[in-house]
Length: 412
Image (tube, rainbow, N blue to C red; front, top):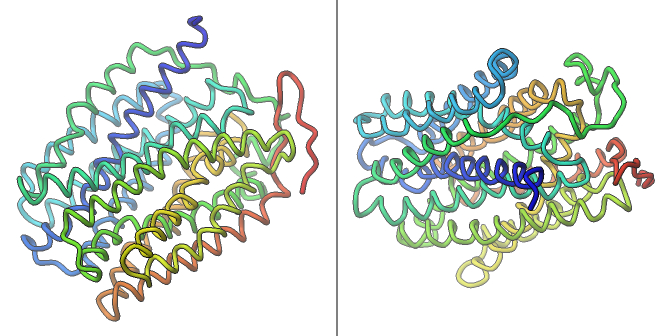
């Protein structure tokens, strides 16, 4: 294998592994929050707010990462951020009240912002446009698989060793992987991008007039509302409402996400790249269709019991996670390389502000006043909105280059 091919794959592997640890750290909280609640005696709404505050600081830090990467390089900022969140994870050992846990979460959010903003641009500049669905599927499979591993680690370690123990798992490996990035060269900015410069693609002001970016971002926001809310509260739902033990609930949901995340993330990216030869809107189409098909399965999952419920959870997760690669590729391709980091900061700010920032708290609020089952109607509605927005966004998808030429697939 030539060094030219080895370098992008090595970089992708390192960044994906670091992304995996990133999401393990996030989801451990969801697996052990009933154990934390027993120690700190806070309401469901308070624990929903804990997640919301994490994302608020995460969003507020995001806009600063683009300018920092210009001054210090993307690689340097990614490494610095990874070291910050790895160190903050170790601070869990010194967390003895809810306020300290809140502070720990804000520091982790600031550290993670650099990685989440800059690493996708790093990956995008290593691979051609027509491969980005698959590549983003690989990179972002860390979201469901890392999330699942967090549930499993929390479910296994929390009851035996206390809720703090599983937080330590990603700290030292995260710091080690971050330091490994020192040996990677930074790819030239936009080396594979071909679309001509235009104000709506290449200026921050133009983002407000870029329908491809706007629809992909709003569709992602509604999808994130649904998926983020379910990830926070589904293990608790299985434990409280369906009678599973905490370990059983986390293992069931976590392993299901792991399997589906691995298969669906790769399959969705491959499928959308394959369909690009037929329609330049393939990334939007695969995302919209998978989300729409997931609505009936979600409804059954929150109202059924036993084997039927488990099967519905598995199917719903697969369909929701099928859009991981395509939707992120749609966002990446919707803007020019020189504003991509800033555009991703805007994207992340919007989809978290409208997505998992309110969803965790809203579901907790409804749960306190009605029931957790009733609260799960909100993610179902959000999934439907996401599908509609992305179907509409298909007509704005930019063209894609194939082997030296621009794909001429007609717009649907």
